[in-house]
Image (cartoon, rainbow over all chains, first blue to last red; front, side, top):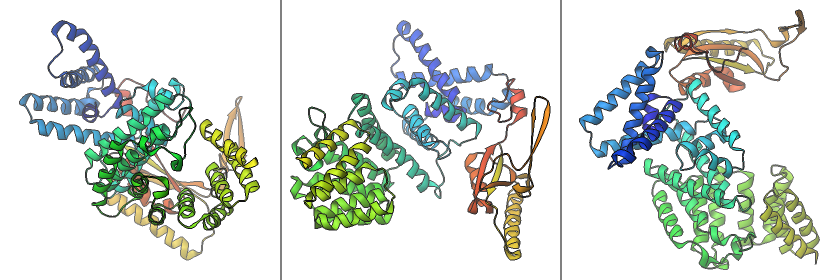
Length: 398
Length: 128
């Protein structure tokens, strides 16, 4: 479909034409048999259906360009291009489509929905379920986004090199959001939401395939693989959250870890590490530790220092404080966390309170720790996490 | 496509030197956009405190002092540019001096000719 969108410059027309092609296939294939290359049959038929639709359109002048372009690609095909050339053209089209779907002129939730719909393997009802939205809401979001692409003239191009780093950031951010939405889901429609994590990994693989020399695309893929390797270990049979330190490391997915480490290695050879590569490197330190107390926390603190320099934020600073507590003790970490609490940047963020609670607990200040866990539980939105925090609080009140 | 680049800035007290600098920056933008043949028009407006708002309700003309909406950043002027797509329009919007102090809103202009040819009402027109 990506190729057709480029050719006709219209998402809706391309979508309708592909649907036409599938209808034609339903009528044709049972009679004539399934063609040897069904995908190519659909693509060719969709292009012909698009030409039909364009010819039927009244304003031929306006659509003449698109028609000329389509006819040209049609005759190219009959002349017979090499498979290689065709492969490159398809990859090129997918890359353009990714950048259009993740254009910063679209709202972030629209970028996420469009990317999943146009590039992912999920259909509208599935995406709606995964985001716990009514199907009509999501469909409306997609319609609005496609309309803005058309009316505002959002181009269907790979951005020029001077804009590429910024625009690539936006694409990676969307894929990362999709992963997190699926990964952090421990309640509700768990299975569908987990599909989002797999979908994000698939998208990250596509990005790496299309932009093999972009270190951050590799960094993101490595990060997702390494995080996903712990998926089965981070939740108990009864659905409770299991902390990294308490996870049964034999349940970590060794194949995922191996692929993640290899991907991280490729990224590391491409130059200055960005935020995703550094986060992947942190995840790799955990992945390489056979037991929680074998973790190289000093190295993790070092990586967090670099992450702070590249993409510092209060949340990164909080995570760094946790690493400091493991490397140098809770007192030093508490000073950092208290500084963050005073700044007010993390007001209402439950992890600020659960972290402070944990540090206070380790320092033996149990009453204060229980208070912090209580605050954290009140702020947490995820049921499994809330349950975990309330349990911690109860243990401190004994 | 044509795009309206709408400039919103917070009014500020300027010295005569600053006035000259701002004027020169806008003139430079105008010259660049003309040279690139993207400029299709534009105007600068007096401050919002000079604005008068007009509404007709039940056939009566209601006139009030002040702009449509009281905001810190106010609509100060616009350019009309021709650009092949939104990315190009954004590039020009970013060059407007006001973008550095305030916000430039990029709005595609409705192409009535194309809509009439297509035999359809232009979709998504803001004016009602």
